[in-house]
Amino acid sequence: VRLDVRQLLASGGEPFDLILATVSGLPSNGVLELIAPFEPLPLYPGMQRRGFSRDARMIGPTDWIVSFRETGIVPDATLATIAERHPGTRAVFGKRGLDLCCGGSKTLEVVARAHGIEVDTLIAELQAVTRDDPTS
Image (cartoon, rainbow, N blue to C red; front, side):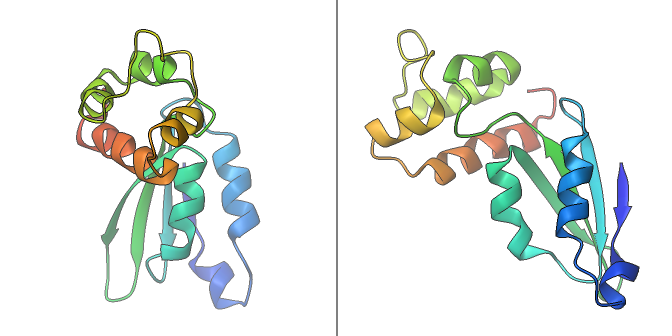
């Protein structure tokens, strides 16, 4: 889905609710291509927490296109669910010493807290794997 918010922003509008409404209708692995007159840095943490990886690139002197891909990697997702959907994430779990055998039924948030890992950092690492290998 492509969403160009340049006109809305130019007229003084706020696109946040429109962006959220658009991504809420995306299927698993769905992509939102957001076109904006600047890199939307403030949007990144919230989208990451909602399970979206991102790839941003400048397409003009001031214009940006950011592809947000739904990954399902969110704080309340279980390790097993994530590893099944994105096999490449198993390497991150292994590197972090996170157990998929017995701990696979626990959520990212619970496991991160138990291992002293910032959940947003863990989500970013896992989503980075999906960016590098979209079939992961």
